[in-house]
Image (cartoon, rainbow, N blue to C red; front, top):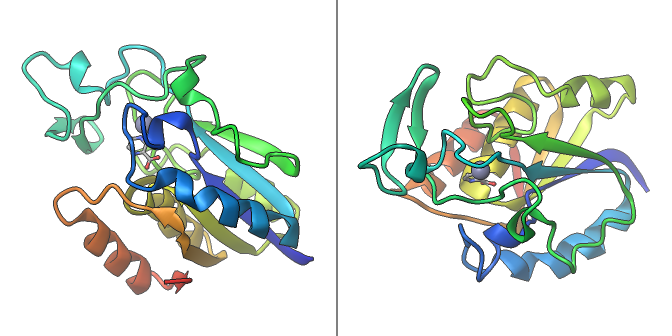
Length: 201
Ligand code: VGL
Ligand code: ZN
């Protein structure tokens, strides 16, 4: 058992086939994640957890369509279809995800006015979620990330983990991407430059 944390990002119904913001092959990674998690002493889950009418939803901005970008006070924000609404089926973890060893669930995106891709910071990149403190207190200096989507919540989480000084690995074979306007290549590049170890490709 490795003294490091596995962070399983947003393996929720809405990001799986049939969901509101379905990621191609999103459910294919679940058997691999289930196989990996017993090898980690600590397992943390993240859950995208939006209120209705969240500001990241295109439906909250008259005249705007999903996947357009708007300017928010904290910077550019991609607009999404309504997804992962608190208490909805779409927000639930996929039923096949083994959660038996998960010790912490980090909710993100629950404040109406700000989105949160990263498990560490909201999209203003300054409001912390507390996850860094949680991991530091347990002296877990190694973080491995898996889940959905590679180029959004996984990548932003990995960049912030590396920025906090964690030894950070993304298992690409246990992730799937949205890939919007070249976002996958751009985020892979950004992760590599930030010193994130990209494994399982
Ligand atoms: C995500 C877009 C919007 C993700 C969450 O989990 O990657 N992407 N909300
Ligand atoms: Zn979201």
